[in-house]
Image 1 (cartoon, rainbow, N blue to C red):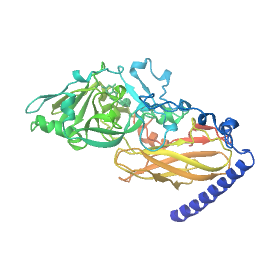
Image 2 (cartoon, rainbow, N blue to C red):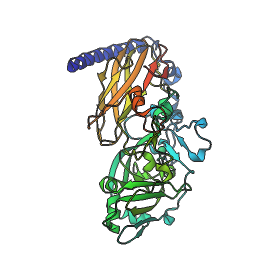
Image 3 (spheres, rainbow, N blue to C red):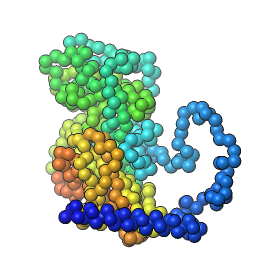
Image 4 (tube, rainbow, N blue to C red):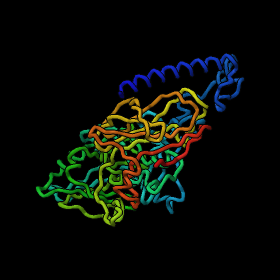
Length: 429
Ligand SMILES: Nc1nc2c(c(=O)[nH]1)N[C@H]1C(S)=C(S)[C@@H](COP(=O)(O)O)O[C@H]1N2
Ligand SMILES: [Mo]
């Protein structure tokens, strides 16, 4: 049945695309009557005229020693929500996920979350101490780290508080604000396992304490198993050295686990035999349930997805016809297996098309092309991962978790597309 649906859908999309193609063709011949308003531009720069930029020499090489996006893309920036926090030094800025495509987040717009501002560390002064239940305590310089076996891996990094403002109902109008505490970059670094082997673990070693070098001295307990599995001490993101806001010169990368544990400006790793019960794993980053008990050590980020366009900050600017819906899906338990999309608030579901690499614990891009009839839509996406886990509705999540939580809200998001093309954050019951 699903296959039939899909085949039908593909035919519809194809037809819709052809129709849209013809309509555009007609529009060009007819003087641009159907062109979207922002596409109107200056006719003097458009065919058959020779455009302004074709008449003069442009900037030479190395004038722009470090490249920046076009000035016309000034909207693609991190943004914060000022009422969320008292001061910018202990706050968060969100990734403009509604303005991006593919799966890699450019370094300059990766969301940032700091508890005491950005530590500015000179590479020559950087040291990483490994001590505690080890045979020989060690101190690594940045150059030491760079001389150790190196791996490259792309992973998503999601703050456990992502979507945390939406527990009691739809609140923030924009995918950037509801889902933008996530980024996905290609890290280069040393497997943490290698550093621990170098120091030699005592037989009773079971936990690590990770400590940051910022003024917050962020500290979290990490089970040894994860450290020996896929944890990295990373110093590069997307080929460049880490940006200061993301932990320059080195941070911990814990694939699939809540970002709070990804200690930045990493300065100390202590090996112990039990967890330390730090502030960030007792008072914060625990999930208060309805019965007054709190879940603790909820490390893994469950499967989640969001439609990035159309979305409140990325409305539709055509009135009907061929439409590309796009979004992101990810899971801390492995690869994304499938993403479904609904246009009617979860009544009917269609399988979306995954495009680009589908990597373990990385963002995965999905698309769904359809012929919009111009009527109102209630858009939803639902991620499934290779463990068989299915992203729950917000109400299903609330039944188990209540609404006292801040963290680990991976409920299905609904966007209401109005006839005007404007999009709003809503909930369906
Ligand atoms: N040293 C240190 N590490 C830290 C933090 C911090 O304040 N200090 N914030 C944590 C939190 S809560 C998150 S969500 C991630 C954010 O990583 P990013 O700034 O690269 O997005 O870093 C984590 N690591
Ligand atoms: Mo966080």
